[in-house]
Length: 636
Image 1: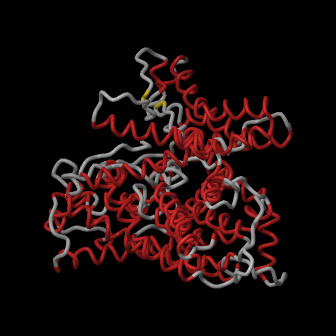
Image 2: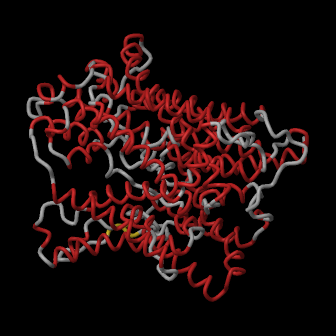
């Protein structure tokens, strides 16, 4: 996919028409996503390619065709359409079940559910800074049961916590943006990673697959998923209608050792099969292989009697070691890039900044400043310097690893194991302060799963922009403005929906797990001291060693097809491991027996699977909320 410069267009400056349209659409998109996911639990954002930005992009492409016939001078350029798409995609990293909805789940949970039985008021409350959460039960009554947000006393009570966490969100997104600038050149221009999730937006715009909209294969794939999604949605209302279910259904085993397999859903999501088709074959194999490998550990361990060991097979601990080792491996393998970057930042090497999203020196200084502010934030919460530093460094390393996973595999990434709540459990409680425990609890909401992490989307935005051949700096204004506006609107939207419907009364997406996990951890950690957990620490080391061994074997033997990336991301592919397996079988057969020509000719069909599934999912996410029922969801 070579960049296509748009002739006659300036290489710098903000495309004003698109910038304004993006700002106007962001509140609509944010409110739509929050309503669908918080009120109706219809998932639109938990996969690497978000549903609503693609829906708007298709609408704008159709509008562009109409303008070409009626008012050619009003047509959008490809760069302008991409600008709107990117701004909407960025908004979905904030307005999502795994970010701002998680925030709303935790912000008042402790004050509302404290009781004589859990003793949170005596054990935990004295150590939690008042300015971080909502404590007014009268204000929370309207939030949990339904009431009025737009009263002076209610708005005043929410002003403090909202301002605190708004600043925190902006600092995190800004820090990731600076880190994205640091790796952009290495991962987009030099390494040329596959970026599977950018294929469909580029094809919709005609930047990747010319003739996409005229392809019979594409329409065949889109037609199948449009028809099936429509029938599945109607079958929810009229169960007697014929349809082909694609949602996840768990495998059930009742006899040992097979019952040790745990929760194992099998799905045939069309969009997941379509996206997986563009993942490199060896990476695709590694992803589903290591999902089953984790299940095999549990089954084999039960057969050998190891299930009596508390925590076996230590999946979360292996994941901690695996993700941190993978991040360290990325830094090592790109050491030449970091050396050149240091030379550029230190002034030993001049030039080369003209095409950067932000000047790298500016990004480095801004990133360090934001890192220092985040460190100061957690110190104000009460964390020790060491605890706060560990939490931030691990978050940066895992963010880097997640961005790389998305760039190479486009795979969902349920990454929760390395969060501070789990890290601090591994070491003696004498090494962890009470402030560290509180800080770990307060960070759980944004750590939980990381499925809509900002950094991969920022990197993908720059990869999409690279295809236009225009300067990345032209995208800086829209992307930064979209981030700020999305954070503000998302915080308003979750409060508005919660008060209008009642978080516990009607909001199907207001799940209790975030609050329960957070407060349960803090209460337990503050009351029950523990020593070093050596078995779990050994499992962390095992996970790290596995990543090292896999990389070493792959570097030494050309036939070795197991990737360290698969070891990290595979065990978390609960919802889509089977679509990955199906896609691998199909792709392997096509490549082996048809060659690259057949593979390329089949690509529009798989893009069509994704497009049709997403469009029908977006349609039901409009029809359901408007008509007042939980519509058909293409995922979860």
